[in-house]
Length: 365
Image 1 (cartoon, rainbow, N blue to C red):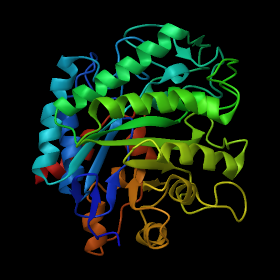
Image 2 (cartoon, one colour):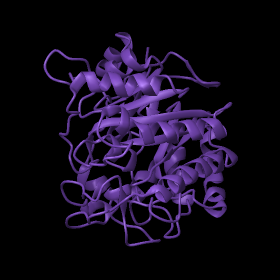
Image 3 (cartoon, rainbow, N blue to C red):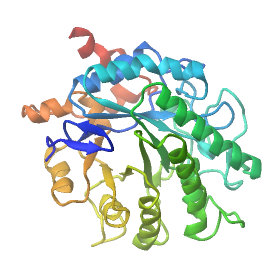
């Protein structure tokens, strides 16, 4: 099944392989994509991935940036800088989706402000990531007010519109990994006492408002997806307090919006996600969401990926670190070539920027 074609909205995919979004802090200081990024993304398309989801791109020039040298799409200049990247991927026959990410209280580098915002004035657990340029504990964010709600939604919508104008095939709304939208879903980070806090329904409200407004603006003939997880960058083991019942509420609501897909990420995509004998996160998304599901989590091995597809728990698989180690992974799997192991130190240390050796294969070609 991995090499069966698939239709995602109006786009034809030659196989079921997707590159997962991965922060690489390789943009210009002003948020513009550059030639290094073009070569980096082009390599995945050359390597046989049918679809590529970019690293998280910040949508505004206020609070959304999460890392220094993170790319943005908050201005027309930033959007224009993405066009060579998009064109390079399209020339290789793949599609490319822009992931829109507001870091919220999990920001550890922002060129526009030293302040962070979040649902509540509660800092994320854990510490900032050194290989993404941070150190120490996260600062305490300011709790969002009514104006913040309006501005964040407006900026997400404007960023989606710029992405469409820049030639992207769609956008993925980042609702996972501890960033702003996931902070609303997280019981210990969202202590609001208004209509955006408390019950699962209330904690979902802002996420659904963002989704609805983006769909209304650019949803026609443009892929709109969302990424969802339980774990976070700084709290990998977090689980939803309501378990599978909470998953049913979250995925059920998302499935009714008009989204084209739900992208779930878990430490092990094939393992039960809500306790022994329970569904995988992908299986829950498929059962309760009822739309296209992209599964992520240690799926570089063919057998593991095939098991999720064959059982109907997922429609597509996204590859993260396995793709960094093997930018031509689909071609290798197809040709029965052994995969390289992921070398954390070589690729992500001391900083996670794209290294010259990652581009060597492309340059030699």
